[in-house]
Image 1 (tube, rainbow, N blue to C red):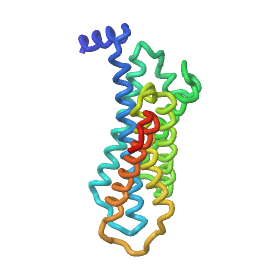
Image 2: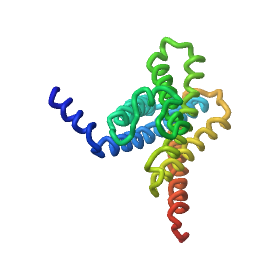
Image 3: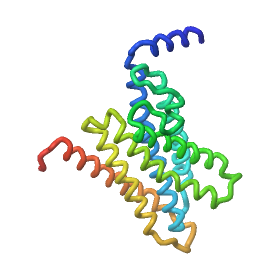
Image 4: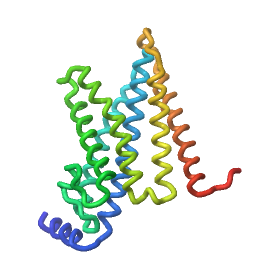
Length: 226
């Protein structure tokens, strides 16, 4: 334990790029798992509104990807405090308007962290909350996804690459198309129907997201049309 702390102190005392790369990787992974959590949640909501049975493994994937997003977000924040290149403290990462750089765009990440925390806590204590309260808190997921997307696109170093904006674009389109489907789908009185909405909606989301990623890649790299 002492040896591990000594190694950690040595790494943070120098301009070792390990934590800089690690915090970027954790942020990207958190965004991907957040996108999956939102897509699974929307697919489940579509199944319920159409009167179909909800597949249990999709629910487990929804809960697991949401929890993993929270873990990755915490890891992203902790590695920022350990990186000597970027002067972030825990106060900077937990208190809005106290950041050393890019105050507004970093604050989007701070607010989205609290949004994610509220979502996870409400899910863990769902049995102890009135359904209307839980449902209202769950709508925060849409705001959290938007804030994280803006935070990553405006603050993240990888936004300057040719591929990361494609991930943001594809994810936003995938979530957008399922959100629109959920809004415009009328509730069906018949219950217990065979599950079709979940696989169909997820496939459509993946197709739309893939098209969005490809279109963004072509636009950013001036790829000639075939």
